[in-house]
Image (cartoon, rainbow, N blue to C red; front, side, top):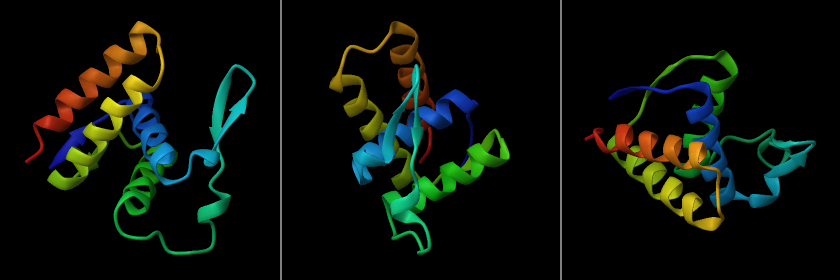
Length: 109
């Protein structure tokens, strides 16, 4: 199913995936963060989280707002977002965005 995502929603989903794959790939950068994809460079992504991260990364880099997501991918992202919400006290707007994204993903069969 095709899901419309904002660039912020894509980044939030990527944060959840990176934390599941290898948290060290998420680096502090000034007031924010950056992704360090070096550990994945030069090899094919393995099925599952790495392949889904490659899909999200491609959409983010090309600034495509729509993404084809399978039901199992949507469920995985939803679970990771819920886990991410519980890791720390996020600002209210981030929590709202995560919940909105989880609602979108819940419609994917």
